[in-house]
View 1 (cartoon, rainbow, N blue to C red):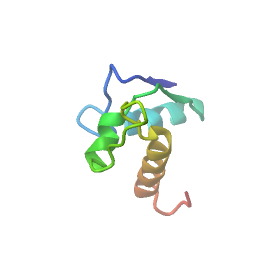
View 2 (cartoon, one colour):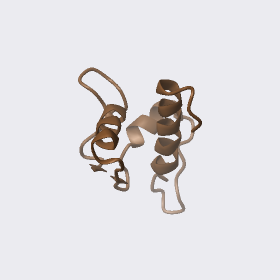
View 3 (tube, one colour):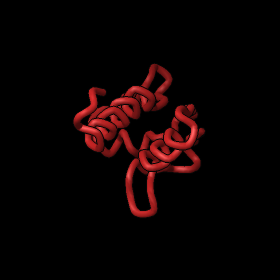
View 4 (cartoon, rainbow, N blue to C red):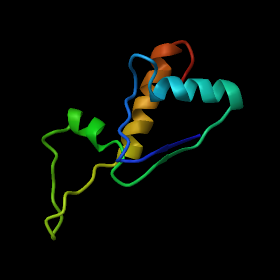
Length: 88
């Protein structure tokens, strides 16, 4: 299983494997997995794609983007890309 925290940035794909490769391995090994993302985790990845969406709350704090929805979408796209004949 996997726990992502902001203090330990992660990447989705890359040399030596990324989160997608880890997910594939864990699913082959166990048939299931749990991903936990702490508040602020993965923000660097989302911001690469959505730089213009920096919002602040009433106190002036940066509003964090929903990494869970974003990551779920990315995992589905990755799964479709490597297994295009199966429905997502």
